[in-house]
Image (cartoon, rainbow, N blue to C red; front, side, top):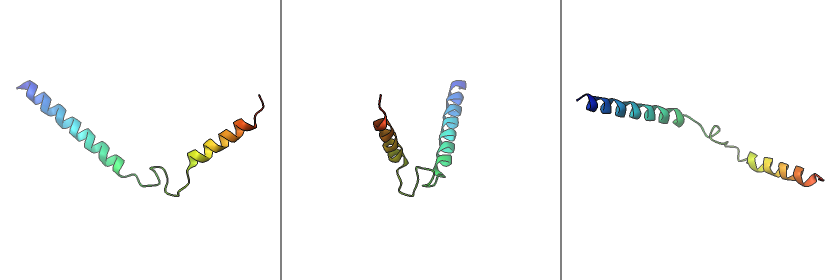
Length: 58
């Protein structure tokens, strides 16, 4: 009986934690999820790094 109660308690805690995490992540807007302005900052950064490496003379 104690084992069943512990199992129910663990299950309830896991469900509560997952639901809480889901609610916190659902509030993010498009600006927080990578930007909504259409610019790809990673591509611009990679191009600038490649230009810097190509300009080096080692």
